[in-house]
Image (cartoon, rainbow, N blue to C red; front, side, top):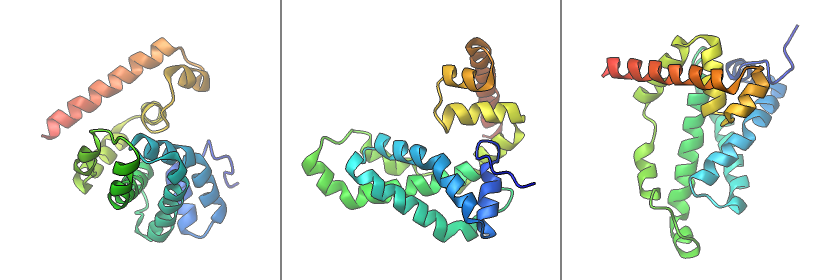
Length: 182
């Protein structure tokens, strides 16, 4: 029986199904990540009135590059590389307009330095794959979906205190893995 509940099916499965021609899988992926893409661009300094176009561009680029998605690879780091690079491209093209119309955050010059390299992406994927499913889920809810501990607590039916402790252990574990790899 195919999974139709977008909350239960992994992003990886949705991308695999979409790659195989299932347009419903694309709709689920789009609906799941639209707000995250929108928020990501706003946080990077793209004005609200331009974000709709940027979001469309992100999903257009995703559609054009779906054949590059490697089955078994973590979907979100790959997808957010597209999101990040699309936002950077938009900012580069529109920086003169932004300079005239808004006060740019000082961080704008650092955005180019933050481009995710394949090496960093591989390291993130390795760390995510090494986590238990519950840890990975908590990490994604907190960092990718940007849920508060209260929201996660409601969703998972666990206390905020235990979630915070679990999250701190996850971060500590990640720091240990990263420091070992250096």
